[in-house]
Structures are given as structure tokens and as C-alpha cells.
Length: 84
Image (cartoon, rainbow, N blue to C red; front, side, top):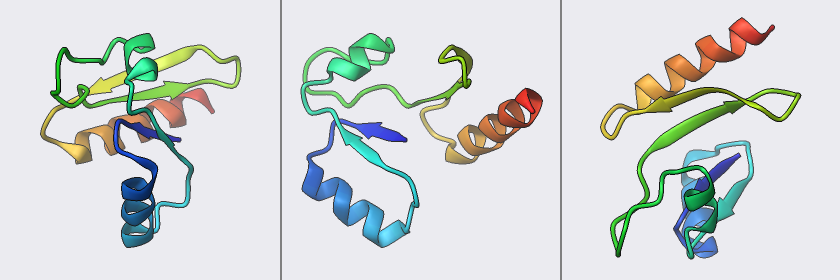
């Protein structure tokens, strides 16, 4: 699942352009971001973070990088493989 502060219509456009294949949650009030500790003050976007959550609903890994989406993908895959 992906979560961002973008409105639903913007997320729909992003999904259609990138064929993501997973659901996106719109969090314009940044309530979910606050729960996960990635909310920034004011109008700044939330911090970029990827959370790997296990079947037992616990956070297994947290990947943070403001600039490298490849780091998010690579490290999340590594964390998922280690769960198997």
C-alpha cells in the first residue's frame, strides 16, 4: 500500500501513469503520517519512508531516503526476503 498527502484524483493519475498494482491511501490531513512519525510541520510534504510490515502487523523494517527511490525498493525487497 502507498500513502501520501496527495488528493485522491492526483493519486489516481499517478497510479494510471505508473501502473502500480497496489492500493494508494490519500492522507491529506497527514493523520497516518503522524502515526508513523513522518509528518512534517506546516505545508511541507511528509518525510519519505517505506515501512515493511509483517503478517503479525509489526513493523519489520523502516527505510528512509529523501532522494533515492531505488534505496527504498532495494532495501524493502531485502527485508521482505529475510521474512520468508
